Image 1 (cartoon, rainbow, N blue to C red):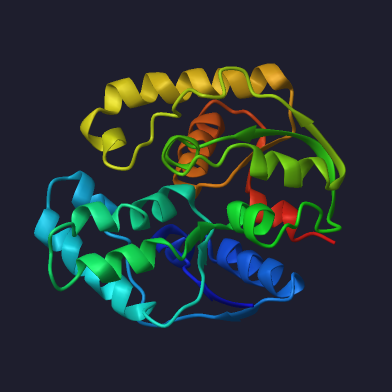
Image 2: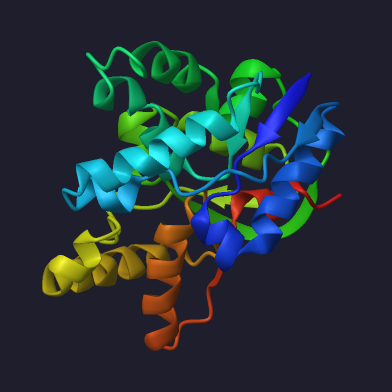
Length: 238
């Protein structure tokens, strides 16, 4: 199976190991992976800030870059959910509507792809520790991906997965929301940090680097020793 890797901005700039782990996981599952060098931002920051024309430029570039891909897989529920919005953005556009529909149909978040497309629930991974999982808003509400990452984590040898209280609650990041509504955002992430502490977990695991960066930053400022890791970092241990 041929898969194109969408690395996302945060992985490309700050968390290169996440893109690497994603690629290696796909290869371990027998996929042939390519990396279109012409890929760019999904367009979400500009789109959410109301800069529609600027967002469309990024979106068009993404569709061109992945035009010949069979599957497009990325390590971010938030970014993949934006790619899934392209048909709505280009609805009525004679030139781009059909391409946006075809493009969106090929896009998957990594755990969604593993479980729902490849039917893989056990990667024969090994990782020792007590972990709790933060499910990002876009991933669970827009993509509908909620149980897939937990299924994969439960099958990792040595992992003790404990439920996160008020798991459905937002961490307060929301991209530009954290900047435009900083006071509210700080209260939300403080509450999330308290909930993580209640689990007594050694590791906070998530599938969106923006959320992990936000929660991890808060816990670090509070002097907490909980380690923050992307789910691919655990799944790629063997």
